Structures are given as C-alpha cells and as structure tokens.
Length: 109
Image (cartoon, rainbow, N blue to C red; front, side):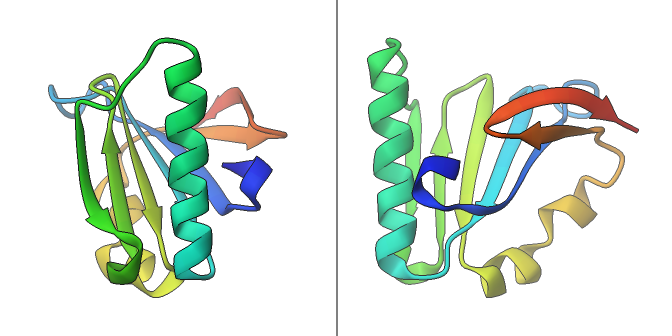
C-alpha cells in the first residue's frame, strides 16, 4: 500500500470481535487511478507469496475496493467513502496495530 502512496494506513485487530476474519487493513487513495494501482499492487504482492483473494468487491469508480483474503480483509477507500463508512468507528473496540514503513510494530489499545 505504502509503495503506491496510500494514505492513513490502519490495521484493526478484529479477532476477538468477529469470526469471519482476523484483521481489517484500511487505507485511502486520492484518485480512481491510485485506488486501482494500490489494489493491483496488493494483488501482485499477495500472489507472489501464494495468496489469492477469496473475494473481490467494489470498483475504484465507486471509491471503495474490498479484497478478502480470509484472514484479513483489505479496504481501499477514497477519503469521502472512508469517512462515510467509518469502519474505525464501527469497530472502535478493535485494537489498532501501529504501522511504520509498511510493517506492523505494536498493538495500540
């Protein structure tokens, strides 16, 4: 994500809150082409380590792309869609993992 200049990257640890995934990975892109570029980059990187998405949904034109890898779900938003859906607010009880230089470094409670 960060390679393609994604903004406001956040990882929510939802393991204790839901059974359908372990983490939500969220980010913003500033334009439709950037949203597409971020999603393509994620798909290529995951394919390179043998992971393929279980489910893909949304389009860059709609401002939200969802990539479900079972153990984690990636949400790539335009800033207005991220504010509208407010996943951080909906999942406020989920611990947030700190992200620095593309690596999660600690759990923030």
